[in-house]
Image 1 (cartoon, helix red, strand yellow):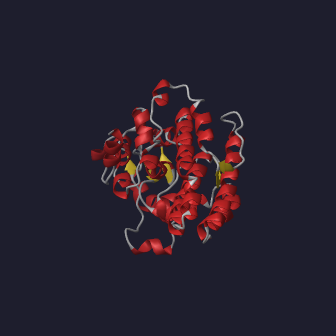
Image 2 (cartoon, one colour):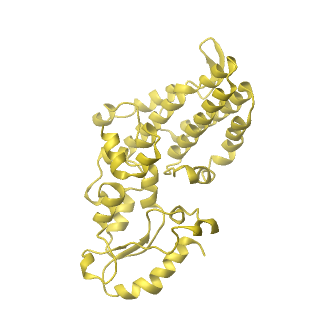
Length: 305
């Protein structure tokens, strides 16, 4: 029995009888590998056990620990989506945090608030999505020539490091294009393997990581670039952009010039508030600190600066 099933059984056997006649919601959401569906027997060695947050209008009126939906959501996300979601809320919340609220399972909800909150958070608004996609393409463009440049001067280690960064950014781009919140590093690859594009891209990305010479490393990456470029065109968000790779100016490096895809997406954004944003993206794209990203308050404070 996996963690979600254990939590459901615990709710039905232990908690539901104590809440008979009380309007409430019960769910397995929040922290924990079982929320994302990646728990195994190994998960049971610490912080394990059935855990079911209970949501009621008045927590003091029930004989078990409970929360109002708004209080729990504010504590977990830093804002209450039932009161509305601002542009700042979308950008200052990590995709892991959004996944923890929208994944998992709801066992009971005759209040309706939790279901409404999860629906509101299911995916980014269209122009926020376009902005994040554009920023991710921008990230790819900034280092795509460095795999070859490092290798050309004999720095194979540096070339490999850049290639690994590009692989991760291609994967992040795929999560965005697939409309799925990317989890944090422990489950990043496992979740990527579930995306529709993974079967095609994985051999290319693994080939780049396994290569010992920059030319081979770059060749695998170039194939991945062409694949995600075609995926972009398949979304129909912009006019088609040429998916072919090409030399970097007069230098013999294969690049996509990924900024072309970023520019095409930026051009489709009409919201003036989003158009004024710098091309940093959300908190996941702008920062890479586990401490900051795992603390909702710190992430919001850091992004606000």
